[in-house]
Length: 299
Image (cartoon, rainbow, N blue to C red; front, side):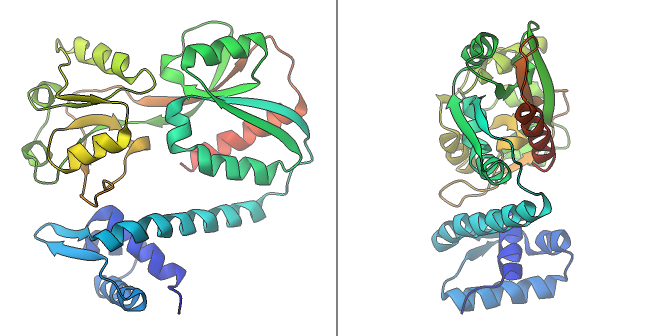
């Protein structure tokens, strides 16, 4: 017997909120119904998916493994439904798309599924490059479009369409003192061991807005791996300020990560679609641009 889609949705909601009561509110069901759904799912699977603690629930090792698969099933179902809502385009021919590492790490896989379903005849090629290299290739005509961090894009000969404005929040262990403080400033964050993500010009962005508050960034640990950041934060080794776009409530080890807003205004991470202004574009270009704009509104 296979789990129902409703059971999977309930399980994902519990995993992402860390509490049965919050998951019930999110899914618009009673807490007792949510508890019964989880119990039936665990009986079907023959495995315990959560362990209980004073603040809610935590994924077991089996729960961590099952969560990844459940999220993939849910994403596939959403993509299948979306594919029925729009008729495939007849656009054809080559189109070169560039992305930065942040985009390829967090949104590229589901985005490519949508593009290939919507444009089955399009010869789509995708490359990952740094922001400066993407800008150069757009201007040279080697790329038609690029998805990048628009907040880092200098003024010039490129046109940029904003796609997502993702706020930056403080990430920490659920029991970290800052996560329950009445008010948290960037100066308070600077006094804690800081886990710094070195990806896609993030370091220069952090140094810039920290300097505006008279602070100097002195990371406890610096890494190019977002999973390392999650693991260190979730195990209580430090805190981080990162975009909601890259937030996940659990580390790979199944430990919980919570987030909260800062009292100080921290700039958002803005994702945008860039292209060369002076270059003539094909009809497929405008169709893909419209699909990307709609897709990112759902992220």
